[in-house]
Length: 58
Image 1 (tube, rainbow, N blue to C red):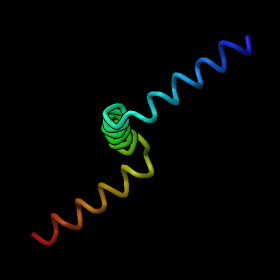
Image 2 (image 1 turned 90 degrees about the vertical axis):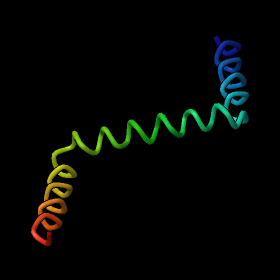
Image 3 (image 1 turned 90 degrees about the horizontal axis):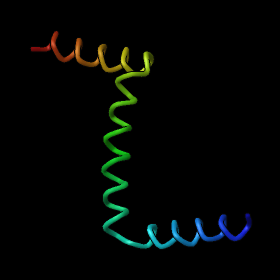
C-alpha cells in the first residue's frame, strides 16, 4: 500500500519537473478557471455589471 502511494508521488514529481507538462497543465487550469468564473453566480453578476457599464459608455 505504502509502496504504491510513494510510487505515485515519484511519478507526479517527474511530471512536475517537466516544463512541457507544466505548460499543458497551466493552459488547462486557465481554461477551467475561465469556465468556472462564468458558472458561479456571484462572479457572473460582476461580469454582467462590468459589461453593462461598458455598454453605457459607448
